[in-house]
Amino acid sequence: MGVQDNKEALITPPLLEAKKLFHKFDYELFKNINLALYKKQSIAIIGTSGSGKSTLLNILSSLLKPFEGEVVFENKSLYDIKQKNLLKIRREDFGIIFQAHYLFRGFSANENLDIAKLLSNEEVDTKLLQDLGIAHVLKQGVGELSGGQQQRLSIARVLTKKPQIIFADEPTGNLDKDTANMVMDTLFNYIKENEAGLILVTHENDLAMRCDKVYKLEDKELQELK
Ligand SMILES: Nc1ncnc2c1ncn2[C@@H]1O[C@H](COP(=O)(O)OP(=O)(O)OP(=O)(O)O)[C@@H](O)[C@H]1O
Ligand SMILES: [Mg+2]
Image (cartoon, rainbow, N blue to C red; front, side):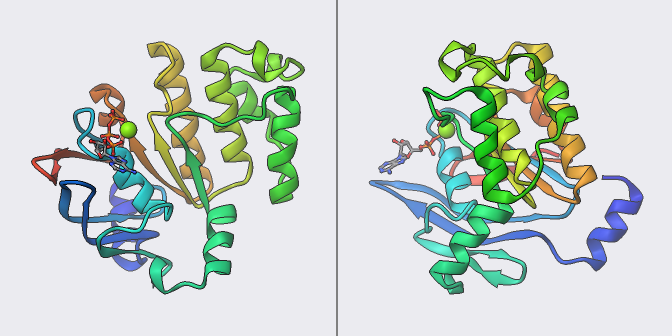
C-alpha cells in the first residue's frame, strides 16, 4: 500500500474483518485468526497443503461457519445477517474463485459469461477478456478449452459481476508463470479500479509477494510475512 492508501485505511473501516477465528474438523485446524481487508488491498495466504487455507477462505467468504469467532462485512457480523441478505451478499458483493472451477459444460465460453451478465446486469468487459487472453476462444465450447483457459474464463465470469471482494483459491494453479502473472495483473487492476479487495490463497511465494500483505498459515496460526 502507498502512503495515500495507508491514510485511507486509517479513516475508512475495513471491507472485511476476521475476529478470533477458530476452526476444527477432527482435530484443531487453526485458532486466533485475525485479519482486516481494506479497499484496494490484496492479501495473500500461503501455507503447506492441508494446513487449512481453503477452509479459512471458505469461512472468510461466508460458505462455512467457524467453530468460534466471527467475520464482519460492512460492520455487520455475517452470523447476524438474515439468510436472504447473506445470499444477496454472496451473489452481488463476494466473488469466489474456487480451487476447482465450475463452468457449465455443454455451453460455449460466451454463454457461460452471459449467465454472469444476467445475474448481475453488468456488461462483459471486452478489455478484461483481452487482458486474460481468452477473447479469441469465446465461441468455443467449454469442453474444447484448455484447463488454463477454463480457469481464466471462470475468473472472467466472477469479475463480470463486479464483486467488492474477490476470494481466490489457487486461481493460477493450472497456469504457466507468464500467464499466472497476467492473471494476477488483471486481479490487481480490478481491485484498484473498482475499490475492491482481494484475498488470495496460493502456494506460490512469488505471486503471494506481489500482494500488499502476506500471511502464512503455520502452526495453526497466521504468521505475518509482509
Ligand atoms: N468438510 C471437511 N470435513 C472434514 N475435514 C475437512 C473438511 N474440509 C477440509 N478438511 C480437512 O481439513 C484440512 C485442511 O484442508 P484444506 O482444504 O483447508 O487445506 P489447504 O491448506 O487448502 O490444502 P491444499 O493446499 O492442498 O489445497 C485437511 O486435513 C482436510 O482433510
Ligand atoms: Mg486448498
